[in-house]
Amino acid sequence: MIKKKGIKSRPGRAAGQRRRLNIAEMHWGYPPIIGGVETHLAMMLPMMVEMGHSVHLLTGSVENKKVEYEDRGVKIRRTPLMDLNWLFKRGLEGLEPELFSLFNSFIDAAKPDVMHVHNMHYFSKPHATMLEEICHTRGIPIALTAHNVWDDVLYLELTRNIKWDHIIAVSHYIRRELIGAGCTDDQVTPIHHGVDTSFFRPDADTRATYKKYPQLKGRKVVFHPFHKYMYFFRMQSRLPYILSQILLTFQDQNPPFLPKLDENICKNYNPCFQDLLLILEDNCRRVFYLI
Image (cartoon, rainbow, N blue to C red; front, side, top):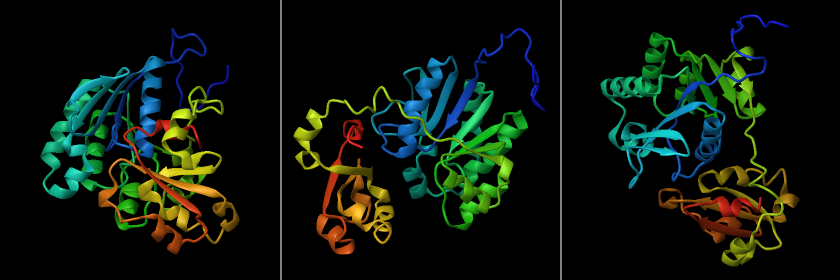
């Protein structure tokens, strides 16, 4: 048997048998909040429960949602202290005592073998530094999944100065950016999001979607969150022919706080887009069939 350096064998467990872990997850949002990370968590966390792990999630408050409940075996706790909209209105000053109490009580309940956080290398320095202090004091490793990168001092500071035990990058691009920000080569591992092929499949029934959005039928569709539409605009000079063949479809749950965007503005700004459809849905999974 080959032994890897730094990994101790665990007596009493058959070869290949998976260890069941207590996993504490932390992110700013979770469905019904719509977003890429939120969708990722909604798929991944219940699957981890099915694999035999105990999973707790600390996330932001949502109107008409209980403070504590279970979603497909995932134990969820919601708090305004993880709600970015509330935090930005309140400000981040003086949060340390409340964060100390919150994080310790969450850890006491989850009893985690590992703390797994998402995009906590941005938005709030008090959250990242308090979590680092508590976890390292209690001997709990912190794994960061970096779904995004930014271009300012806060991102650089939290990425480089917080002692993440390991960082998961969701793509090779994110990994390169993290290394460029000062992370070491062996500190970051790229792991791509998985795809549930039992749900995302070519033979999915799309009749209800076509009935509601007849513009989609017979078209090549790019479906993307509304708040990241600028990425598509920036591709104009690189992929003008391809973009002229698609239906650009934005989706968001509550876009009034975002810059006003309508079909005329899009066409004037970027004439390669022949059509635009803005979809406002509470549940976007039906449209995912068409990607």
